[in-house]
Amino acid sequence: MNDATPIFLIDDDKDLLRATKQTLELAGFSVSAFSDAGEALAALSPDFAGVVVSDIRMPEIDGLQLFGRVRRQDEDLPVILVTGHGDIPMAVKAMQDGVYDFITKPFATDRLIQSVRRAAEKRRLVMENRSLRKATDEARDDLPLIGQTPAMERLRHTLRQIADTDVDVLLMGETGSGKEVVASLLHRWSRRASGNFVALNCGALPESVVESELFGHEPGAFTGAQKKRVGRIEYASGGTLFLDEIESMPPATQVQMLRVLEMREVAPLGTNEVRPVDLRVVAASKIDLGDPRQRGDFREDLYYRLNVVTISIPPLKERRDDIPLLFGYFAERAASRFKRDVPAIPSSIHRHLREYDWPGNVRELSHFAERFVLGVGQASDRVPASEPETDGTLSLPDRLERYEAHIIREALNANDGDVRRTIADLGIPRKTFYDKLQRHGIVRSDFASSDRS
Image 1 (cartoon, rainbow, N blue to C red):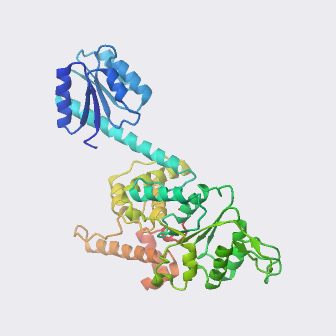
Image 2 (cartoon, rainbow, N blue to C red):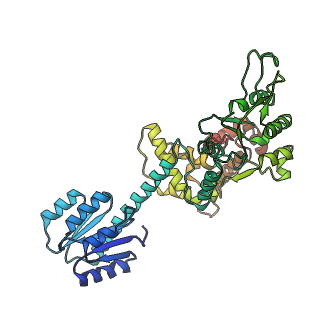
Image 3 (tube, rainbow, N blue to C red):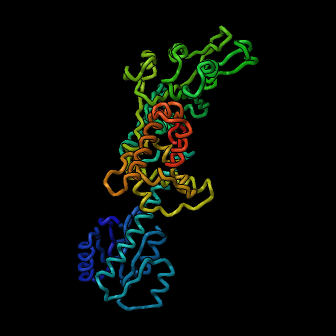
């Protein structure tokens, strides 16, 4: 509970009003006192995050009438009514109508404070749920750019500024941070929204087919090319071309892509015909292409041509305050998908959300929320893996188990979930590797390199 919860206190007895105000303030609440119900109603905003406490017997607008007007404005706003007449039928009727609590005078101080605290906690949950629903509405089409941290506010502001400018964009971010989501949003917020959004993962295709996928081909251009194929670049004309994991693009293809960016034209394989294209290119990389040590054989001139605008997407560990909101969104989405209710969230899950480093970022959190809703939580869901516990509260075998799980997750994260590279790094047989994944409840796909989450 937030001890600074605002309280509207209404009582026409000014001496009692002053005394009750002091009592609630000493309990840590922020109290606005009114001797007239009309004044309180005029000051009550639609997003009031607190509790209303009112006497019943008042001239002009009494407590029950006040409650009726408050309920029409916000039926979830807790109203506590106080009366000195002990009218039991009135109390029963008021409670049936939705009054949060009914207190008779004279009342013990603790009785009022405890009632207000419970009402304040209820109001806090209501406001959090409304915030979640608002964020979900802003995240239409499963768009998880939810967040209230300054980093996410800046990201959304930047995207809105550049979405309609047609400049090429380079996205930098860790695996699972949502680069394709950002690229898709740039497309939907631009005047190109009516055109195609065409995505290609440069790291997911063999080098032998990347050129054909990008540039297309004519019949007979190579063995097996039996009919014409429109390439991704040409298909994206009028819209947006998203090149994920562009650092994996073969060097020969990089040369051709540089020409496309400079000339805005494409020549399909098997023809000398040059076709103009009108497209915006959004490229994404999980490494810093501006660092020559990381760039490797990626062409420097292509990097500078792409680097008109660079946007860095913050990892989840750098916006921890957004994690509960994201978890709630993903849990609600999973519950709707699986036709289940969202379970009550135990303290262990709250602790995991707060302390785990989420190396798989938004995608990993989404998968975790799905498993939570399905009731199939695993060992990795219960134990923060970023820092294995070494405080002596666990036995040595348990600590070794946790440390082993931590090492495996780190290896998977470093290798983007690639089994072959991870096994090579760990120096263990494939069967042993899969046995350990099962024992520790590690889901390899949480570390895979696709950025669709």
